[in-house]
Image (cartoon, rainbow, N blue to C red):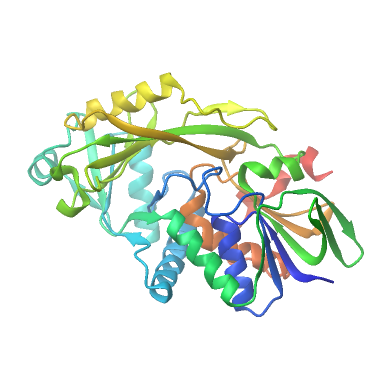
Length: 374
């Protein structure tokens, strides 16, 4: 047997799982079809928001709080500025499910949430144009993560503990065996007692039976003045528009403010990949959002595309494969994935050991789709 554990996909979840497995003394290998951190997956774009409330699924809020603890622990041992506590301001129609759910989630999880009046918001951040029918909820302890820096740190720490790195090594097949799993690539083959597959949009090539949708999500950086900057304590925004769409923006750094849309995206069918050209309609919608809520933001400086995998019900997958219980799958993370990565890695490792998870995983089990578990 070559390894106790092989991790297929070394982005956010995979890098964290590799580090924690190596820390636990396992003989572990990390595989990736590229060389992470890279520009081909869901962690592309340098930054990701992390909030500790969730208006729809309590499990996500609990995961976010545990993930926050783990991100801060990594920041301490790496001595790198991985987490920026800029605060996240949720904006939405006063009586919307989104705002009611955010308040309820904060109360349930014990998360500090400040309800700002129109006057208080205008005094503190006059650059925000809040509609009269909207509320503003500030989560002061939320912020954003530096995703490329975090993944590089996790991989470095895993390697220091003896993890083997097989990067630029796309696997093309796996075969269950009596005492583990055999993994095959053009570069060779390896055997592992347990496997975690967490390859983002690349999961489809190894597990085509999973109900994953691959979406290309554009985002861009816009010219912004000092009053919209992190240096001036401007927050990140998480906004529900009157049209029912969710957008985000980060405080400006070096005169550039990043913004994008949570929902939406252009769907592609594997093995096709995201096009190089950005979708003009999606770009227009981001621009319209900024003009409505941050009208002082300037023109687009540059943009890019991230490739993410989602499920039909928009809940992630975290489960062992019924047909091959030596394999644990973490997939379909959508726009939630990065912030939750270390907590998901912990849970995935617990599943590989046959331990009872510390969280109710029923919303994330493969049994949601009976055809997949047959």
